[in-house]
Image 1 (tube, rainbow, N blue to C red):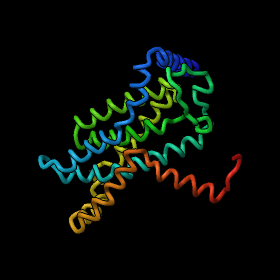
Image 2: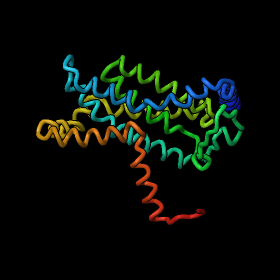
Image 3: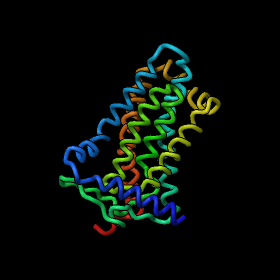
Length: 233
């Protein structure tokens, strides 16, 4: 266990040690996650509307990206809540700062596991089922984004690894043929019956997935504050 912890810290320090050495590199890493939504939506549309191969199977899987990411994030938050709080490395060990002003208010959020990695690799798992090329492309992009979280001191490597495994596992389980066929059948029937309404709702749901459910999270936080009240402000 001590060896694993030492390796975790060593890998973190090695990657974070690059931060602040190059203004160009800092900005590339910082902005790398920016096109996540565009990239995801492009791959989704490409595989949804493709005519070759088993289009029905692809659509059965793709439509489950929304619940797969949602369930993966719920599982992530549950694990994070049940396990002992893990202080982020930027606060526990210190971190090299980038060459430009930046702020991350994450001190009160447990570091383990990484919700960013969980959400990205739940999407990756679903894309791998419908297209190996699309899945590998998004997986490589996601890995680069996740490394950026270590680079800035937001996560330990083990936080990222746990999130990756959780996301892949959730996406894999939910897209098994028997599960995907049963869960997607009423939605795909509705797509045939009322395509305009179906795609309007689908696009709204995909917009939430592309950003990691930002609006849903804000609503959830507001509900918690409504029940518990506001403290410390």
